[in-house]
Image (cartoon, rainbow, N blue to C red; front, side):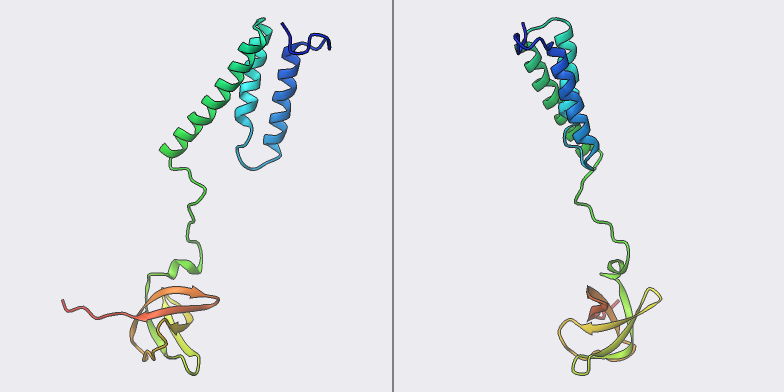
Amino acid sequence: MHFFPSSGVADWMIWLALAVFFIIIEVSTVNLISVWFALGALIAMGIALLGAGPVWQIGSFVLVSVAALLLFLHFRTKLNITTKTIEKTNADRNVGKTGVVIEKIDPLSSTGQVRVQGQIWSALSDNDFIIEKNEVVEVIEIKGVKLIVRKKQKTDS
């Protein structure tokens, strides 16, 4: 039994063409998009070569494609492979770090410098207060090329 009995094209050729199509799509993208369908089409092609009917071919295509996708998703979560993990690489490493004011931070004159991890940065206070020289501050965020800092509270030990 064939999908298109009047065309003279064997079912396995259709599945092979679909597998090649899905592989081309996969190679042309960066993400895993159609590899599941390529695998399903190859299995369906094998089923067609064994002489199974269209229902078995389509069923195996759907089953294998869905199973491959679910298996990948299962292992992705086990291996903690996520696309949303952002690793701090440059200036954003300073957020949460402690520094020392080396030039008074004055919001009215937009002046102030802080030394954080051996580097000197221009700085602003997060609440627009003046922070004197030699005060210990914590980096709250970075806006452009300036650190936004907050005076670190002294703890009694």
